[in-house]
Length: 197
Image (cartoon, rainbow, N blue to C red; front, side, top):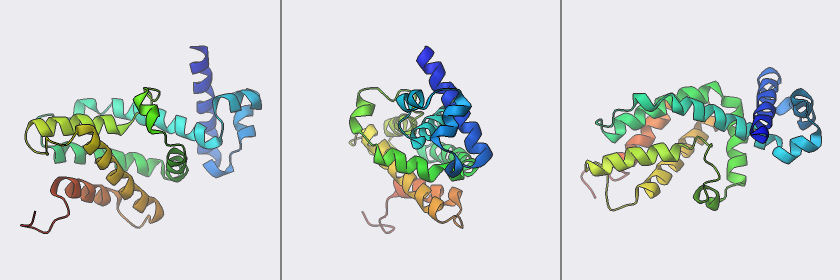
């Protein structure tokens, strides 16, 4: 419990610095000073500034996702629920644009498929769990192919989501909501020409 509180305190101090000075301007030394911990203690909990950012953003995302549960209509088609969540996600991403690229770089650089399986990321706010729930429901209604594992489809959908997000991060002239709409259409309808399968 004490470790969790200290981790939260460090993340909160870092978040205040990120918001006040901009992510790239903040150093680990500043985070340690703001959290009132030694650099050694900071590095024990977070090996890099990106790790602090990832922890904080995932906490923000988890809190925001927790508030979305009541908005899902499990009687609605997959594309309706996915589009609603992606609209919320677009708004969330647009509130955190400067943090997304370093966060995504860190997550991909530190990707370990065994972490999720071991349950070590229970607090990650991982959207894949949400996609899985929506996909299972859609499979049960015959909207999506029931012969494919829902978890596999959820991961595929999540990578389409990341692809759209990366396009937007690297070209802010794009409309993120439109990018996410295209993701849902591609996932549900595929990329086949009309009338071909």
